[in-house]
Image (cartoon, rainbow, N blue to C red; front, side):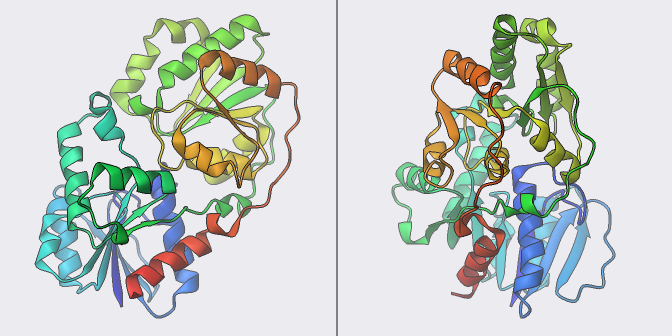
Length: 352
C-alpha cells in the first residue's frame, strides 16, 4: 500500500521542536523498521532531502498553499491508499479521492480558550472538518476520546481509537556528558499562551521569595514571538529575569542532559492531550509536578510518581519537597507507551 503523511515543516533528519513533530519523527523511524511491505510518501515544506530509501519517498513542497493545494494534490497524484493527518487538518481536495483518511486530535484548547490562539476560527473550522471527513480519528488518551465523543455526539464512536504515543525514545539517546552546575527546575514545551508560562513564572517567583534564590528556571521550547515578547515585559518576569533562562533550539542529546540534571520538571498548561515532556521525564525517573488536568490521572497507574496538584500553593510546596529529594532512577515503560506498539496499531488500522 501507499501511505501519505502530512509532516508539515519537519524537514527529514532535523531537530524535533514540538509534540506533533515527535510523533511524526518517531512514527517514520519505527515504520521503516517494522513495515517492509508498504511505502510511505512524506510530504513537507522546507529544504529538499536526498535519499536512496526505497520505502520512504520525501516530497519537499512549497510552503505557500502547502496544506490546501500542494500536499493534497501530490497525495492524489501519488495514488496513496491512506493518508495520515498528524496536524488535524484534512484538506478538502482529498475528498476527490477514495484514500482512507486518518486524523489525529490532540486536545480542544482552541475550543476552550480561543483567545489564546492567533487564528482560532480557522483552527476550529479545520478541526471540525477533519473530524467529519476522516474515516478514523486517533486520540492520544482515553480522556480525549471521551471528550471528543461528548463534544461531537453525532460522531460514529466506532471510528475513534485511543493510542498512547511512545516515550521509549528517551532510552535511545546519549545525553551530553557535561553536567549543569547550578540547580534548576525545568519546563519543556512550546512557549505559547495555552501553556500558561506567565503562571509558571509567577509561581517560580513566589518560590524564590520563600526559599534560597540559588535555583534557576529553564524553559526549553520553540517561542511564539508575540507571546514571548509579552512575557519579557511582565512585572513577574522582571523580578526573576536573572534566574530564568529561555532556550529555544536543542538537540535530543542536549534535551535529555537537561532532564538528567533538573531538580524537577514542572508544567502548568491550561490544556494537554498527552504531554511528552511530562512522560519523558517520568520515564527517566525525574520528579514531575503538574496542575490538575484530567489527562494526567490517566497516566498515574503506569507512572505513580507523577505529582498532580490543584493550586499554586500546593505546587510551591511540592517544589520545596522535591528539592530535598534525590531522583528515583529509570522506571519500567509499559508496552502501550512504546513506539513499536503505537506504529503497529496505526499500520493495522490502515490495513483493516
